[in-house]
Length: 170
Image 1: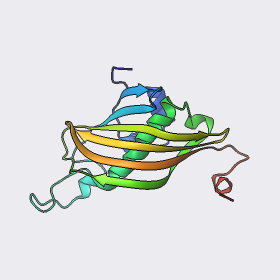
Image 2: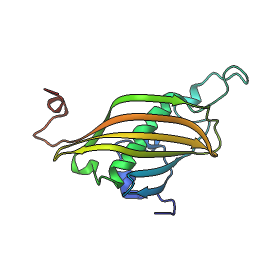
Image 3: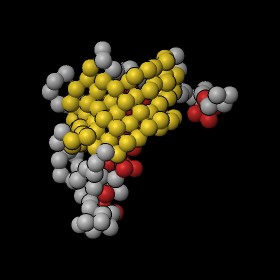
């Protein structure tokens, strides 16, 4: 896929509303390479960003690191939806399991969008569980902002299986 898109079915399936999804386009999906790219607009009204007490030198307005960690989950959801075909409507939900490494390389100033790239480096798939390890690269106008190495678990949950019971014995 080479043209940016945001499928309404994807947005409807997301476990977060638009104020938490914060993605305005899926830029590319490469199922074979296990890679997706999405775009996140940046502006002063972003969660956490709008609450910053700004100083032009000591604390310029920027996209919060905490929000970037949240966005690893959102672009991970893009990956699960388009690469693994996991649908929230079918009972699949994902949770971050471990941040192996997080590197904040530069501040992302509001204005230019962030390009969020997520590549699966490993995955174990079962009937009701997928454990995947991801590399993340977030850039703004070609400049590297964030790099991450994280593991997430995708679980298929139904009325007979509660989320609390899925973690027992692990």
